[in-house]
Amino acid sequence: MMKSLVSGINDFFATSYHIKSNAIFIFSRLLSSALAILSYVLFVGLFQHQIVEAELLGFGIVMLFAVIALLPLQEFLILRLKNRFLSEYLAEDAGFSRVAHRKLDLQSLIRHIFPDMVKMSGSQEGKLGILDTRSGFVVYNYSYGRQRKIRTRLTLESNHPLFAFLEKRKRMISIGETLEHHDVNSVFVSLGVNYIIPFYFREKLFGFLAVTNCRRMDSLNLMARKAALAIHNYLLSVTVVDHIKYRKEFEFADKIQDLILNNDPPRLENIELNLVNRDPSILLEFFQIRGKYYFVGTGLSLSHKGSGLVLSYLLGVLFSRFLTDSLSGVMQMFNLISDTLLKISYRDEYCLVAGVISPVEQKVELAYSGRGIQIRFVDEVQVIEERSKMDFDLKQGDLQVKLKNCTVLEIRKKA
Image 1 (cartoon, rainbow, N blue to C red):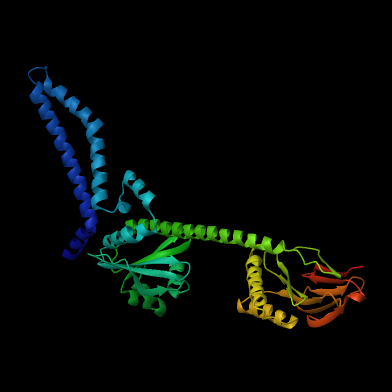
Image 2: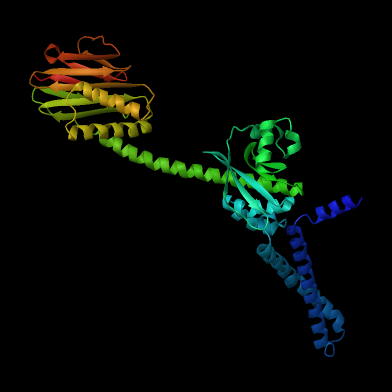
């Protein structure tokens, strides 16, 4: 009997938050009542000899004064006192909640909502798990009396059995419910808690509160929904920032890609080079070394914007090698492109052709590989393997190079 009575009293005054809230309410009411009585006494004392029935008139004037001035002042005083001594995120009056709504973000959740939820639960310490799209759930620790806004060593992966367990129930779980689930129970033991309250928003788990005691479940569930919304808004803002960053990077890639595509072929004495199509996903570049003209054609299967970054890197690698005069043949240039794509972990399909043009001999040496590539004389089809190296004599006819089944280059002998 005595134990249930003590428990009922503890539930009524669950935490210091409720004690302070009740004290602010009583103080503001007593102060406004005292001001009303003092105003009535002063009015009657000043005008009881000058005005007939001064008591009745004074009562009416004080009532009007209380409605017009004292009640708004009383609400303003409550708002200021709660803002000074309490967390605005746990206030129940509408005006105070509107102030809190504008400040509800991730930092407010860690610094203000989290400690107040721990106090409201009646626990001495608690853990806060926040969803991080990169590393799973990051856990913060709070001890009553002094707040430690530090990351604990524990980071839970998103595929941990605990979150599958919460997904099935979508409510608070206690350590007693996990005795048959050792993976989930081990999390309770490692955190040193007895209850875990999930933060759900639109059927998705965004975090959790882990505490040793659990009181005021209605208020805690309300704050759990607010916390989920705060984490959701934070992750959404991070996504927007990432999109803006990627959009700027793609704008730079487009500019670089335009410079690549605007490259004109060299003018040779006995040979004419025609760029037939300019595909954004195909790199075609020419170099001159020791009287010979080298060219590289690379076709990627990436999108328009994604290909610009890869092709720009390949072009930089080629220029650096040619400037140092460290390339001496078609196969070396061919292998350089293949090794570079392998180095950057490019796993998609691509077609590659590397060649050297000898204007005096009017010959072309080519090395090529990949699907969607075709090397042929204009008047006849030359059957090739997926990876091959061949020599072509332009005296036999004009040469045509296709990448990704698209004609990109024609090499003609001048009349």
